[in-house]
Image 1 (cartoon, rainbow, N blue to C red):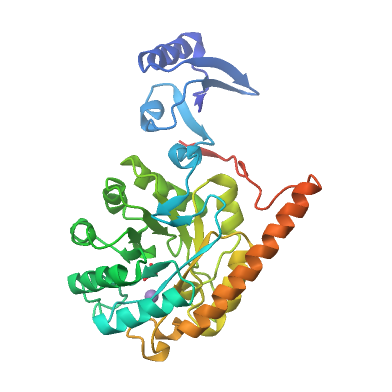
Image 2 (image 1 turned 90 degrees about the vertical axis):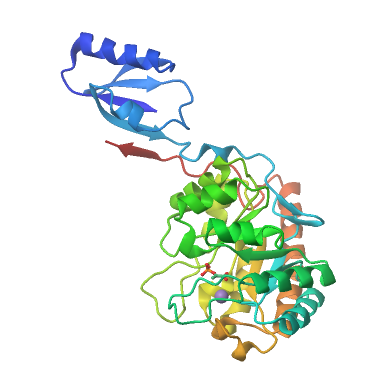
Length: 360
Ligand code: PEP
Ligand code: MN
């Protein structure tokens, strides 16, 4: 962190600032930057609030360098393990599949069986549905959770389902293996802190208008409570384009992977909103290094109660799964070849973006 001092503060004023910093327990050095007098904070203050520095008399500006989300960036091994299923950390990409909404027990059990035999390792299904209109189907609620648990028991597939409030976290706790935070709630900081206090993995979806910085700040909120098991999910962002439901930002995969070790998956269903586009974007997602896919699959896609236009069949899921197998082995041979030639393996790991944010 760098503190830019007010102009004309003088030696006495500068010493006052240094004294206050000493009282805060941070070590600091005075320096000159062209026409500015600055104080370079040498201690790690990444988790201390900016205002404690900006409120010191004589400080004109606080510059935070890098580490805006230290817990996210410092994660070492961050693959998420759901019993035998490993997501991220270089493991083979996984598929999370299931209906947009749980519609009934029969429907879910048949579908769970279908997605399992078509190659999915994790079952998804919404019990609490965030709907743009309150007059649309809002999910089967607690009954939906019970059906998910039943499907999980019968198939052995771990289950992911969305929660939107503290009450729903409690309700879902014993029924799901992963809490999903949907795109609409990525900015709900209280909810993020609440799932962060649980011991279950969190599938965090990028908000419709979130920058990658904001996405990672949201992950940092989850980590505040001690929960490091986060799966980041890019599900399309809102742009001026109308031919697709959203615009799939595939570049988010290598960018996120260059910044953090957290697993990154792609949801081509919500990104495109069209079943005819799901397979090509799934291929692209695997090709650019995603750790998995989240796909909306239905027994009778066009009759899906929610998001019918983007639902695919189990047969289509099986095709995507065989694409994944083929692409994964191609990518692996490319990596082996690159390694033998001493070239860089993709995606490039390490810090890509070192940005300073000015807070005045
Ligand atoms: C979902 O996955 O069920 C969902 C509602 O997605 P999103 O939050 O990305 O819109
Ligand atoms: Mn949906």
